[in-house]
Image (cartoon, rainbow, N blue to C red):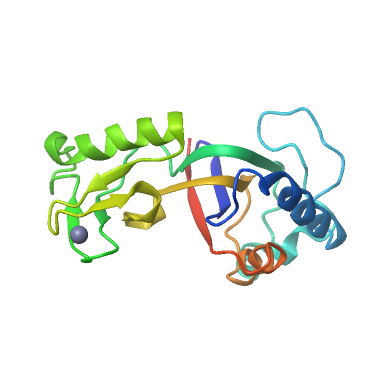
Length: 190
Ligand SMILES: [Zn+2]
């Protein structure tokens, strides 16, 4: 089985504004009844589902009440979709796709290495580029697109544990509360 998560990540929040925005979104989710205000000390989500948690999820899945809650991540974070890496990365400038796995699901070490190095550097310093193999331009790591939105490099994320799949409207509600920031849903299983 394992535990599943869905994280709505704010791609635009700066480190300085993340704490204020986190409070604003949490207040909104509490007002909507989606999570509880109290912060419980638990592994899978500090804010447990509220009375209207089902407003956030696909109605077809709404009979599966989540027993875990929301963890808010504030500060520089490599958000990722679990153990298996993304099949590809796409350059935002030339849209060329770099394959990171073979058809047999073996990691292509030579292709992955520049990304792995950049992820480590970004985690440490908050800035890193990967030179696109196709157009040869250095592209900031957070600007790359990934298969299944596997990665997001950001300062604010709302991580829900073991909830049914969100509606499209729910991440939009969070994005609206963030003042129209770009968001991405990173999801996976541990
Ligand atoms: Zn390129």
